[in-house]
Every structure is written in C-alpha cells, then in structure tokens.
Amino acid sequence: MPDCIFCKIVSKEIPASIIYENDKVVAFKDINPVAPVHILIVPKQHISSVLEIEESDTDVIHHIFMICKKLAKDLGITENGFRIVNNCGHDGGQTVDHIHFHVLGGRTLTWPPG
Ligand code: AMP
Ligand code: ZN
Picture (cartoon, rainbow, N blue to C red):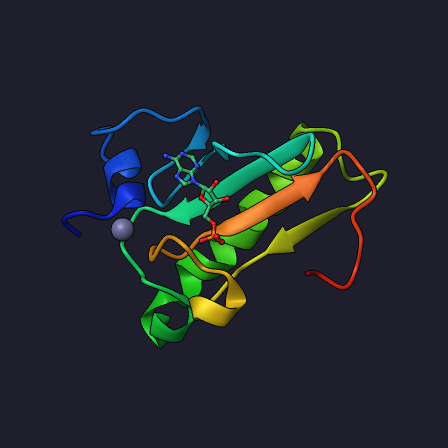
C-alpha cells in the first residue's frame, strides 16, 4: 500500500529495528517505547485495521498471536506477564492504518488505559 509506513518497513524501504521476520509477519521495536519491552508485530500483507480482517486472514491473525507468544518468551517477559494491544480507529488511538499488535512488558502496566 503506497504511503503506508508499516508496508515500507516490511519492504525495507525505511529502516526499523526488526527483531523477527518470516514469510507472514515482521516484528520490530516501537520507535517510541512506553515500556522496557515494546515491540510491534505486523502482517506483511496490508490490512488496515481489525475492521478489515476477512475470513481468509484467519491464518495470519492466528499466526501473529503465536509469534506474540514466541517473542514474549524470547524477550523474557512471560514470567511476570505482559500485554498485547491492538488499537482500532480514532477513539481506539490507532495512528498507523496497517494492523499491528503491541507487545508490552518489563514493568507493571496499569489499567484502565487513559
Ligand atoms: P498505534 O497508535 O496503535 O497506531 O501505534 C502505532 C505505533 O507505531 C506507535 O506506538 C508509534 O510509536 C509506532 N511507530 C510509528 N512509526 C514507527 C516507525 N517508523 N518505527 C517503529 N515504530 C513506529
Ligand atoms: Zn501497510
């Protein structure tokens, strides 16, 4: 998708601190971390938001959660716990229109969100 910053990270048109990649997904460090561990996991295919997920995307969405689990283990945050966040739309706080899942950990996170 032209002008999509996360598509450009996927295609390596712009740099990112990529920590994991396979044929379906890319995971990279958030440029503005709000926790000691703050990574983003995105599908390589452009899906704008949760609202755009189709039945045919079931495999990749499932896969994203498997990679969340793997990376949380690799990053050492499973013992104390962590949070997976997806923001959708304006009120949800979505600022990049390419679906992404934040994995946050390394400190005690508060609830409810602001
Ligand atoms: P959201 O507000 O849920 O749409 O999250 C977008 C996230 O993308 C924010 O936490 C930003 O800090 C992060 N972000 C934006 N641009 C980049 C980038 N070039 N590299 C890494 N993270 C980014
Ligand atoms: Zn995109």
